[in-house]
Image 1 (cartoon, rainbow, N blue to C red):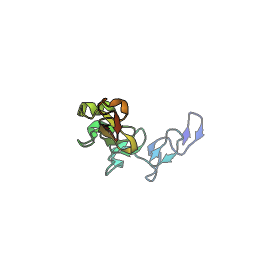
Image 2: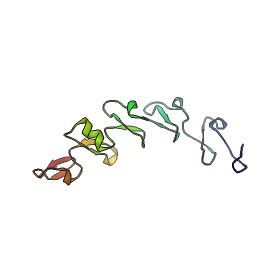
Image 3: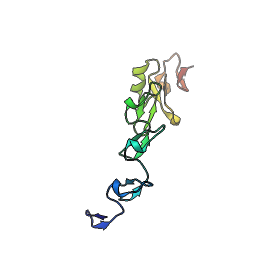
Image 4: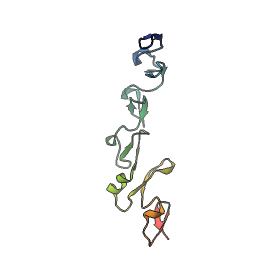
Length: 130
């Protein structure tokens, strides 16, 4: 294959130039690599193809997620409880902050001491207390 941009020979110019083992033609270096090019290449817990990254993911938008984890973290392609504080404050005003440390996300009462009332000024594991 000839890349006319700089008149060099490359392994691929499109996905059609690649085989089943490495079906994606990388647009940066024009080499074949593993990945997906459509949803039919994906299955199981990651049934959708993010065509920007050629990665099979659990979600591309909130509509792809269920009620337990209703928000799609589009950077990671997985469904989570929350990504931002707004996701939590809309769902339950009593737990308005999104704590997404440690790879898991949850809506909590606080993430910092300054979010707690003076009657319970310390934030400990997402809960205000003495």
